[in-house]
Length: 126
Image 1 (cartoon, rainbow, N blue to C red):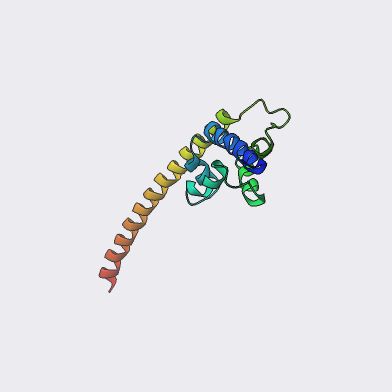
Image 2: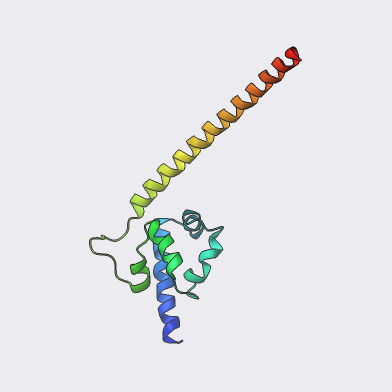
């Protein structure tokens, strides 16, 4: 195995570890970074590709220590993983999204009801 392949495999191993710790699944991370599905990350978790600038920025935005994934060294002051904190934030976001969806459904129902009332009024006016 070439030296580059060994490095890619080591990075892939750390990347899988970080995904599991912070997001649980590859699909959850893909959704968090705005990818269509988990297959976007497959070349990186299998060690076929190295993380580039665009993916690096997306991963950093969602809290992944890309320096650790690439080089095996955690950032100063990082006790290991932010998995628990990220899980709490993720759960809060999920709860908020569900709440917003519920409110949207209620608003949609209200709009339909108003439209029916307007139709009734129009019949009487016309």
